[in-house]
Amino acid sequence: MNNAPMIEISRETEAERFEMENVMREAFWNYYSPACAEHYLVHVMRGCPAFVPELCLAARDGGKAVGGSMCVRARIDDDDGVRREVLTLGPIGVLPEYQRGGIGAALIERTAEIARGMGFRAILLCGDPDYYARRGFVPAESFCIRNAENMYADALHARELYDGALAGAAGIYFEDEIYNIDEALASEYDKLFPPKEAVGGTETQKKFETMVKRVRPYRA
Image: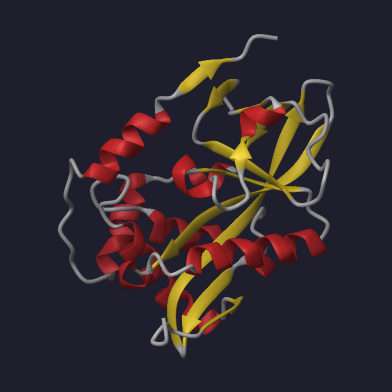
């Protein structure tokens, strides 16, 4: 690994915002669905009231942005009536040619470090269990946390930022509405970028379709 790049991670700058959107586009293109909307999500997320700018991170190889991650505030409405603030992590992406080099893991660890220092209790996300189980996340079901439809979901994961942070937090997790992307607006925004072919039926898309269907009803 002597030729491995030296990656620096710090807060995204205003000057590299469009570059970071292109990183997300490259990272997610045809991954979960034909084309992608993550670059548009990043674009609108920065203006979201729940956006946490301190956790908008860029990973760079020299002066080149090669990865990034963002967080917004979310909540868990506990079964006992308590509302707890948490974070949603995502999107988090790395340029394809830089993937499998530990950059995603480094972004997660830096996010956790900063978030812990800011007083946040936990990070939640929807993602691939095969990946996030190796990054300190456990199924949200371990804490009796369900999705907004009050269902246990295999894709929903949580990471405590200190021991016992989610003790007694059984309830329903609500992510911010910013994730409900208008696909037509995303498609229009994509015209600002070089044309790319949208392809369906990929293996990663099939895996994602299977993963999101793995939900189970909650029974009190």
